[in-house]
Image (spheres, helix red, strand yellow):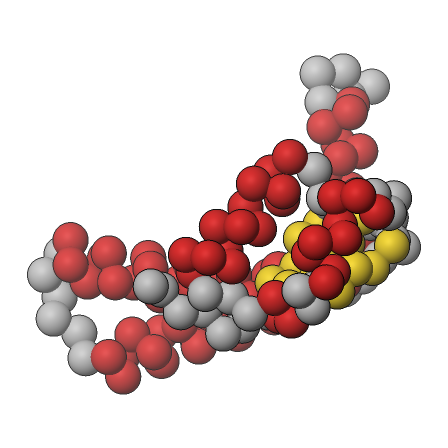
Amino acid sequence: MLQFNKRVLFVGFGAVARCTLPILVKHVGIQPGNITIMDFERNEAALKPWLEQGMKFIQDRITPANLGSFLGAAFITLTPILLEVVLAELNAAFNLNLDPGVTSMAQLLVFGGLIIFFLIVEPHGLARLWQITKEKLRLWPFPY
């Protein structure tokens, strides 16, 4: 069985979350205490068996006011993972035979460069960058 000892956040408790939770607990071995479910409505009947196992529930929703927290956490968590996969594939595709220390240093350089880039381009964070992108896409075919 695969072991995963980190924390997991489910944003919403719809059909996907209800199907995924048993798989994570049974086959991936995630401890129920490491799982948090966030939804804007509390569905007692569906949540009861999971809360009894030790999962946490937060009744809240993602709004423009707290979107930056989620985007920032996703960026900080997923970017190193994505960089590791991309660098491993580049290493294999071009037969570079890079030492692990070189790929680790490249990860840190790219990750740090992305943080500096985002701070320069939009100092108000990823949520503001997302808001600007949405506004431009609404006007996209007719910018006047």
